[in-house]
Image 1 (tube, one colour):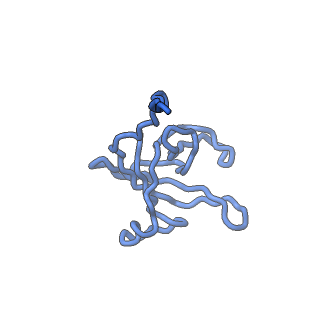
Image 2 (cartoon, rainbow, N blue to C red):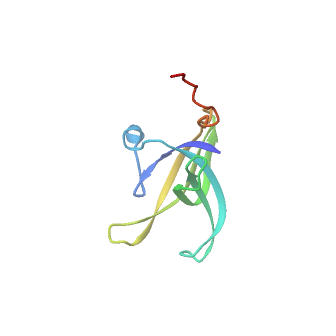
Image 3 (cartoon, rainbow, N blue to C red):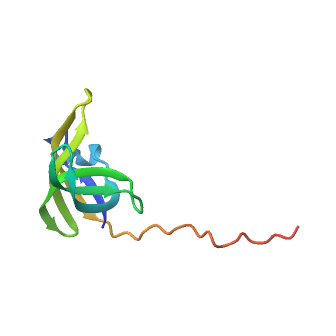
Length: 121
């Protein structure tokens, strides 16, 4: 599912709505939710991943996501974000994503089959 996502927290702290537009640039990608085994937690976990369009590159991950609200082509996912701090330690923060379904038409691939026009010298 193609979405536009904005993070609602920074370092586990909720961002006031007046600064969301300033600090949180929207991120675009494909949302995938899956179950997997987490070696750090030593248990199965559910993950929400924001992937680059038509790619396997993971841009963001939300651990144990839950839908808090849904309506008008938008929904809020909440869970935990895992990052490394400046000391190299793994820390997890509460995180929420405001997601909007991206209804814009997908980018058209370049037309590589069309040959360049013939020019007579």
